[in-house]
Length: 450
Ligand code: ACO
Image 1 (cartoon, rainbow, N blue to C red):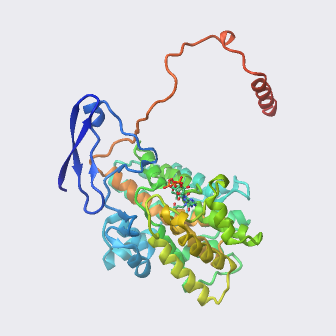
Image 2 (cartoon, rainbow, N blue to C red; image 1 turned 30 degrees about the vertical axis):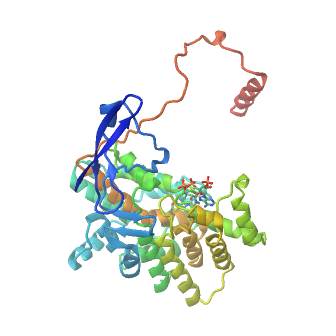
Image 3 (spheres, rainbow, N blue to C red; image 1 turned 30 degrees about the horizontal axis):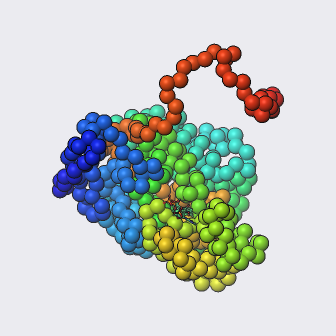
């Protein structure tokens, strides 16, 4: 890696500081500020990490201006159209595509870890039937750490590998069980005759009375959805996993934290929100043109869900692949979908509108994934759990890379403090009286808690 130097000039104090720069294999250079506080007494300020590289990674590269996404150097389009999810999982975890024998061994290893300890079924039964599957996944994945005391030493490379295999293998089982519980149907156990994705479809859609006939096109599309969601460098949920893991927390707890972060509608929850938005337009016979105008009026605080991205200032390459698959599926099934028509109209309107053009707002992966999943017969509450199943390998690969990084440290951001200072403690009777309104509020809260 080439070294660069930058100069920081403190105009007020007439001082200059030299900072090291670092050059990646591609993408923007970075200024190494890790000793800035020690050298200058200054912090940097960057809410939302818009200009901060939090780590040095070899896993995923995004060029947001050009709409490029690479997993370990391979373009996402090539992987989505030619590879399989487990092959991509091996690639993300190990850095290269597997040989034939490594592929068979890896697939067998994952296949042999798909079952859950039977005790886990009791965890599900503790939830209300109407619980969101994401809520169940957060709880159950975290609870797995109570079952594998034999391999929780994260400083042991072998323990780390066993844990990653277990989590990757069990995630479809957990997501499918959450779905079955939600439906009130019996859990379906994984079957070793199926591959990873077909097993997920079987566990989600078969019943003890009826085998689920796997449609090869559905299976291909679901596998593609997993590939497209597998990793996306330092997004909110991955950063959450890295931050949780930086304290040396066990991987089950870290992945559970990642699922929690993914759930938000600014992140993985957006695919569910896209369908809600399109349904609202459809059910209320709204005019998409008018809806776009409502979005543009900032007072309404409405966002066009499935549009915009922190990194992509161009069409999200994953959305391009999904749009093509959506059109193929609808053609193959000969179905006409009002939802797809509305989505395409909205896309067309937004892509030709000054507001969206000026702000570089393009469709992201969530814009078409919801429509596609819906066409596969998957209820909206399962959209984000499916995203979580796909993203698990990215979280695990990033977690492993972090633990094995020589520069690894606990994550501990600093802050700009703007609160009060120099206050002195007063006994309760000496403090100012609360207003009548506050007293009434306290009384109401107290009474409600009885
Ligand atoms: N609809 C309307 N306006 C938008 C949208 C949108 N979807 N997204 C951004 N904007 C506008 C903002 O109002 C803001 O305008 P301003 O500069 O006049 O104030 C400007 O574009 C920049 O928006 P920010 O929120 O600052 O951009 P940021 O990078 O922080 O947010 C995000 C990115 C959260 C994805 C945002 O675009 C958004 O909320 N999109 C909708 C939700 C969504 O689809 N999320 C999925 C992301 S992909 C994923 O996680 C897998």
